[in-house]
Length: 265
Image 1 (cartoon, rainbow, N blue to C red):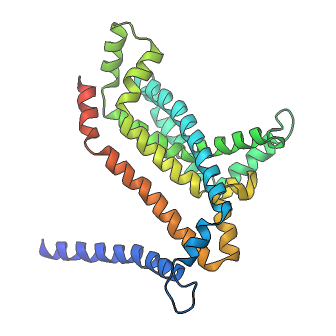
Image 2 (cartoon, rainbow, N blue to C red; image 1 turned 30 degrees about the vertical axis):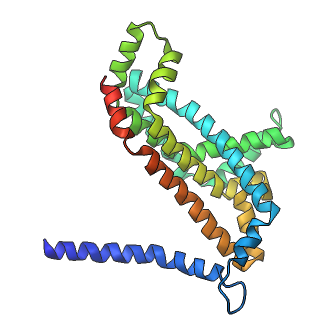
Image 3 (cartoon, rainbow, N blue to C red; image 1 turned 120 degrees about the vertical axis):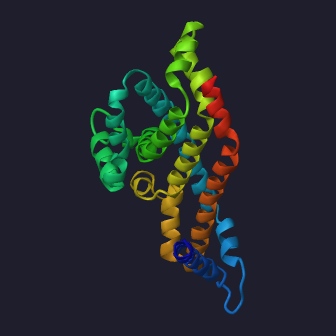
């Protein structure tokens, strides 16, 4: 047991160093824009750049629409599969994993090829292009949203709750809004934050559809032209992502037990 404990700590330390050292090196490099002095000048240059705020604002806006569409699409579908068609759950799970297999470059080229000509012409308008961007991100976020929602529904007795609600005269819409969604608060928050982090840092789809308007292509452009600012952006995006991960843990605290109790009732 002592030997096992020793090697466990060895691998934990090695894993931590593998994660922390590159991050520390990037942060240290981002502070060296002034020769011989450690300063936050590169961070200041990033924050005073109007393109930084424009691109991150645009990506956040697209992320919000992506979250709304994903939740409205996935929650009713997974709920209905668990309630009426459990034999199709394996097929749905397989479909949800396809974005991990199909590269984003294939997805965006297929979207442009199909929707840039007759009868759609979506790439000819701002609304159509933004709609394609949201649709592409819905596909990329599908594995995270499906996993979170499916796990949340597994924690409650969907069949019993639905039968109880129907016996009181509730229809499908009422059950979803007043019963299913409240019991999936933690799952929805988790999937929302993961989707937000994915959309804000995504490069491939954004670069082909909207270019420099999105945060991912903006980061790439800065990386090609400004060395220290690119390191600063890497640290900023890292802190941004981990802030959302922390919010998931904070908002999830104490809610899992209450969700299970609500399902039991």
